[in-house]
Image: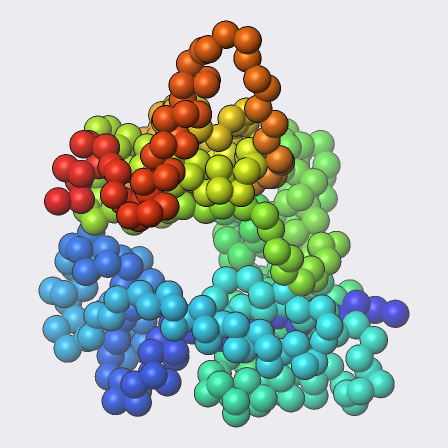
Length: 387
């Protein structure tokens, strides 16, 4: 039985959601922005806004100068999350294997559904019409034997439903720009592809055919790039699972590369993570600190924590911040993600040491924060930022 994977992409999902909420926006040029600060960027925009010269990723300061009639709307994550969850429930009626990804995108494993639907194309139209009828959202559906090709089909084709038959994957990909392949977006590969003027996927197909040359050029990326160039992908459609992790993040009010501010913010986030770990009586075997720059780049570093007191977690996170922050660009957001939780077992010490003192101090602070709120105790450095 051939695999059948659908990729549903609701174009300009954020804009469509805003227009459903407010019907008066349906004919207006609008753009959804990350922040009203001048260094904020456009995340999504309507075709009317594009006609005025705006584009995705443009700075808010420039957008205000170019598009005088365009309405710049703040990012409403609550609205988008609710709409995303609602559409997930709709498409779940068509397959038990549904994998929601970013807002407005979903994978469906429709293998073996031929007995229910006369054809895969007809099933695609049923899903598209159901989403539009119940949620009022329009989009495209790509159909192929794997996730990679189905995903690319919704990017490059304007058709409502586009099907790529089994065996035609390489022909479908050949004339497309090389950037549609995920591995080409890796910074080192992207530079190499541009240097060699490999503008289309067929140019990469010609190189990976010669394994010796491909290994010299692409090195560790050779195997993955070769598979992508020929449209091969064995990854499965996996429904979301509840992950036991703790995430704390902050979007800075003003983009900065000031080390004092970044350390103060990171320390405050680390204390929040430690507070939640102690509440669950667990320790995180994996803690990741990620920094997001204003130009879209992201770097992260991961390490292991053996205790859950404020001093241990803060020291670890500050060290990870220093290792992750490798560029001079200003930072827009800092994220701390704690995963791989394990129950903590504190060993009683014969003699009092710093670890005992740190745990006692953390316990006393937890008592105050539980009663009066977490921000009832803050460091002086963090208070200076929040003022």
